[in-house]
Length: 169
Image 1 (cartoon, rainbow, N blue to C red):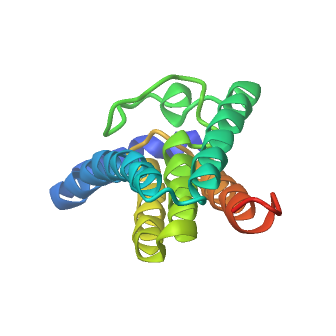
Image 2: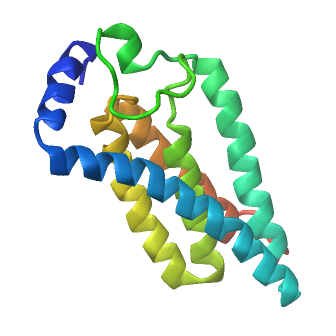
């Protein structure tokens, strides 16, 4: 979707109060839940002296760091920078649209939970999959940004948790 279509998209979302409310709630609730559950998961693993703690912390940390480098490298503008409209949610930093940090963070946290507690991993996967279109409907990301965030977060997260680093618990 091109930036010139976003003003009409924002108007369509705003004309549907229930949809606008859902987009705002998803944009706040999903990141908050992921960012709350992740340290709680780490504390639980630490308290149980679970050897999977190292991978649970290492993989998302690496994805966060690499994702930040990627965003700075691409320096991609957000849709509202290219078209004249107000997004539905707080805009965040301009020029850091690709890949979506909210989406890749939620995705890698979901992958990490699949590794240690699959029911929470499944729940967070659904949440990340709902967050992706919510970021587009909020007007702060292009579809390519959120798809890249999902692929990057889940892909690298899954590889790091289940495939790479043999010998680590």
